[in-house]
Length: 574
Image (cartoon, rainbow, N blue to C red):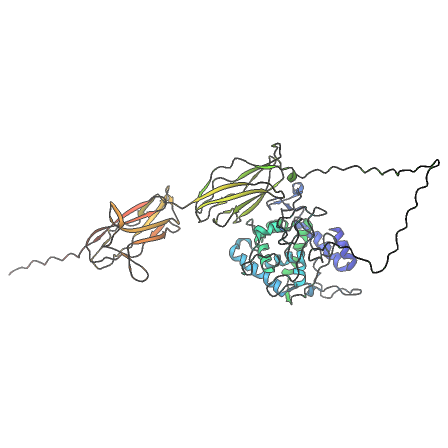
């Protein structure tokens, strides 16, 4: 961080010196040595040292470079400058209109879908400022898509994470290595599972500020963090880019934007200039490979070295080759030593809809010799769209770092309402290895008992309507059976469960006679109240049978009889 401050001090010593001091104080008071582990959980102190495995996948950006410019001081009178004046506080507080709109809409969406996260739009603005200078000063079209791609440096391990190509160049135009993409600088492998459609156009485009802002918001809220809590806020920011300096810079802009900002036209935002990698961040697209060219003016040929003089006695000499320097061996990262994944005792993965699975997927990373490998990132992915099951926290992808015995255990699985089988796929992040697939099954909610909530006899006169509606309560193993599917049918007899063609009936929305009701569901208390029943002109005793998923059955007796004729009062004679 000192080097970054030094760069700014040369440009404006007075303003930046105070800002640097403020951030130093912030670092000391709010985030001393804070970082996150592979699951985004906060750690501190000696245990906070990151253990990268060379793939950088533990963050949204692959820990790519970022802008280190700090917000200006809100002084009433700007300090005098020499030469071209620096941007004033008012100019720095301006956010391009489309970019600002995207941040606010993303925050509004998150307030509805994840209200406990308490995501402020100013946090998205702070990250957008640090990652791309608000999409390069708002260089976006009317739909919010960047006019020219914004790409981070090649992540080839040369000063950055080493992330081989994961998208075939689809997002970043590089089929050899990955690069962070778009105004919020997602690496392709993260965008693949974290991408969102923020503008409702049916696409998930990391180059669109609406899509990228919503994806960033969901990413920051993915572990059920409460961003109104400072510790959770720090953890969320560090999960985006695992650097204490990055944390402090984002927090500085967050505080600055909270004090007030305003809208400026697209393309007129103030551009930052200092980057954590020492560049100006101006590169927006892959640089083409240099091609040979013919110089316009002849160049002076290099002097030809003199030939060695022959030794006395004639003959020629052969120059002695310079011996090569020593080869320095490189130590492979833990990820590079992994040969395969092994199951680590995962049990049967079954659950009833809406319940948490009793078993969790567990795998072990091993070398070719079968030795466990610690500190390796393993990704667990719920595959396909045939299920609405998620991991705890509502996500369909989770990345876990293997422990000291090489084991990674996925977060608990929570079944949705869709029933059937689905796959949890496990892969090693940063390696192209055959993964392990696990089949999980979700069964429908069940009830094993049905009882009426009233003992009142159900009677009616011909052509009339029953005074009481049938209400039942469903339970399973003695507990309330909520959201259980049920069917109610007026049957011919106890031995013939086919639908009756006479006697009591229900009515549909158009008033037509209906004697079977399907797609019924018990409520949160396990209760099911049927619509009103009516009687035709047929008298007698009839049966209503209610069945549920799981086998619970209840048969209710209905009586249709003419009203009793009152007996005449006896007459008396005087």
